[in-house]
Each structure stands twice: as C-alpha cells, then as structure tokens.
Amino acid sequence: MGQNSAVTYAQAIQTQLTSVCTPTPVYAVFNRNFATEPTFVVWQLRDVHQPVYTGPQSVKGIDTPVFQASVFAQQMANCFSKAQQIVDALHGYQGTFGALFFVAKVDVDWLFHTYDNDNKLHQIVLDCTLDIPS
Amino acid sequence: MALPTKVLPGFSASLYAQPGANPTPLTTANLSVYASVSAIAVSAQLVPVEAIPSFGQDDAVANFSVAGSRQSDKIPVQSAPTSMTVVAAWNPSDTNLLLLRADAYNGTIDRTFVISATDGTNIVNYAFNGRVSQWTVDPAPGAEAKVTFTIHPRGNQYGWSNNA
Image (cartoon, rainbow over all chains, first blue to last red; front, side, top):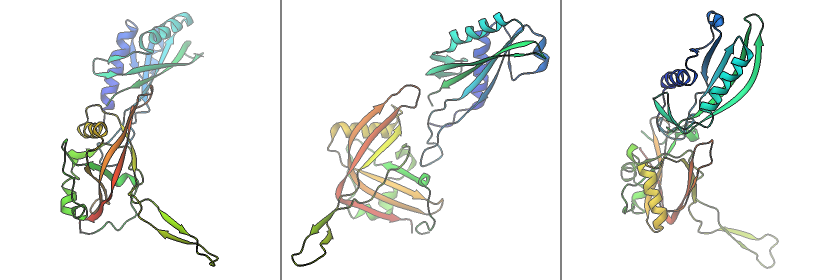
C-alpha cells in the first residue's frame, strides 16, 4: 500500500469527465474566458489523503479524494441535463477510471445550483468522491 | 548505540512476524537477544497494521485477608503477557497477513512476533511467542476494509532487547 499519485488522479478525472460529458468541453478550474461558451464543465481536485499508519512510510490506507465538478450553462435546462448526465454516468460507478486505475465506487453528491448574474451562467456543483484501492 | 533515550510517538513502532507456515519460535532466552530478534524485524516481515495496541504484561493479584489485621494484603501473582487485538487495512494478498490468517485457521502454530520501536537511530524490541486467534474482516462499504486479529502470547515467553 504505497502512495498513489495525484498527477494520475488529475489525468484520469480529465479523461473520464471528457468521456462522460462529450461533446461538452471539460476544463480544470474555471477561467472567465470560458464564459462565452453555452455549456461547459470544470473540475478541481481536493481532499487527497491516504491515512498513515504505524511503522515505515509505506504503510498507508486507501485514498478517497474528491473532485468538484461544476457544470456551467447559459440555459438552466442545459445545466440541469448536463449535471444529470454526470450523475447518471458516475454515481455508483465501479470500474476503470479515466483508463488509468480502478475505482471501487464513485459517489456523486449534488451540492447546489446557483446563478452568476455577471457572467449570465447557471452553475451546478457536484462533489464526486472516488474510492481507490491502493 | 543504546536504548532510545527519547519519549517515542506511537508511530515509531512496527510489528513483525516470523516467516514460514510452520516456524520454530525463538527460545525464551533468545527472545531477549537482539541479534536473534532483529533477524525477524526486517521489512519483508512487516505486518502492515494501523496501530500497535497495548502490549506488555497484564495485572494479576491475589488478595489475602489476615485475621486481626485491619488491612488486607495484595500480592502480585503470575500475570499473563497482554493479548493484542490488532486492526490492519485488509490487503487480501499481503504475504504476512496471509500467514497470520493461516495461523488463525490452525490455532496451534506458535510464532515469534516482534514489536520494534525506534527513534531513528536506536531500537528497542519487544519479542514474544504467540498464537493468532480472532480473524475477522469488516468490509463496510464507503470505507477501507479492515481485518481484525488477536494474538495471544504464550506465558513466560517474551523478552526485551535493544541495539546497545
């Protein structure tokens, strides 16, 4: 049970989300330049942590990192349908993630829907927890 | 080098198990011999446990009431080495966990275990012979699967040593 690579997590998240959301573009972290697009998805990774146990450095537990996927859309209906598409594809998903590693389960938590009046964009935030055997 | 001369964090301790399906445990004398014990405390024989539970020797006392005396008398009597209930993250193919799983199934295999604590330079070892009893796997979803096992030490078969 060694250390997993967060670099691999990031590559896998980008690949998997792109596959799930196609043809909608997927980016890492929001950029105002994207605001001209009718619908797009951004993600950011957090809570990467394998518990450490007693003894040498190699003794660690499993990681359950979370990536926050934010669905942006100019039309509310598009925002909801794209978010639902992610839930349908990933909630409870077990298998190869981003063609890079096996996930025992993906748990998608639909957090909230909000509207940015400056950018004229609806946003739905989804927290996706990965259970990764190590 | 000598005994560690620092207060140690719990993280500094590691558990090692003697290899082999039918090991010959160390003699009681050798359980206190650093060279014998340190041969077991090597990385290939590390048991990947979450934490080392309390270890050492239990309490046991005989309470005598003496006629005419206001106070009774408590005499320490032969007390057993402490049984250890250990939790490990469950890796179904970990070599050392598989050894202990087989021990639990068998029930009568004596094996030498070593708890080794270090301050980075000096090492203190607690070695004992014991048998594995409990072996339960908790596969609750949404969390790491855990295996819990209990090692019952044999009486009068433990020793302390260090790299002095």
